[in-house]
Length: 344
Image 1 (cartoon, rainbow, N blue to C red):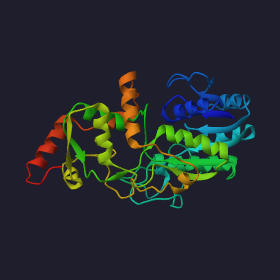
Image 2: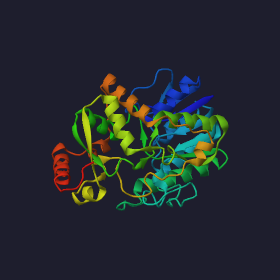
Image 3: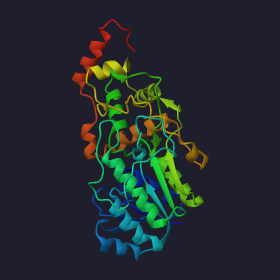
């Protein structure tokens, strides 16, 4: 199988490259060479997807059985790239996001839920950010989906919509922050309830499923998440303690207290958000198509091992927004545990 990965040096793209090489596929990557080293065994072609001449030269290096686009963020550019590659690739897999849904994160979702409208030739300014609702990122990714379909047609295009992706090399830093905090020990502020369900997917499971859709010719849009009700926040933090061997205890503070104390959802306490739809994304279709998800505890343990052994936490600009200060954590915990309520 001949595979072209647009990107291929960071988190999701790198995992797809690794899985394809392990499967014996012939892998080409296309990127500027600025975000990380190439994986051993790939044919690396340098260029920018925003420069037409470079994409035309890339097409001349084909053909491929499939293209996986992990770096498409602007619809107009995705449309240009996909149209150029359509004559030399059988399939196009676009890595999208659950943020394309109009009601994410407020309401439970399935692939039949309404997506944000964005034309396939939209520029980078299309869409708006709203508080706890649609984002420009979501609009843009929706337009990129439309671009992939316009260039390859419904029979040759696959749209993958992962939710939260965790695992080794995670660059936003959500799970690494929790691991570092739990590893530090002491009383750890835990958000909401230990029974709140979560459904992040391991990046390696996302990569394996991506290859499966290519091998089996799966088309259409699929939500790629762990099963609803498959794991809990309590299990996530327990796994962090087990992986790090930390002497930590957890103080579970109710949502309403955290909100009243001004704790920012999703950023100051990563993966904590109170809306019903955050962790209610129906991925039945993907599981029926062969998606398999490893236990969350394995993802946590392997991420900690990567952090310790490599000393590497690849940072993205968004990583600066992640994490609660120890001073604020102590204030919130003290206020809750001195209030006369039963602490977690």
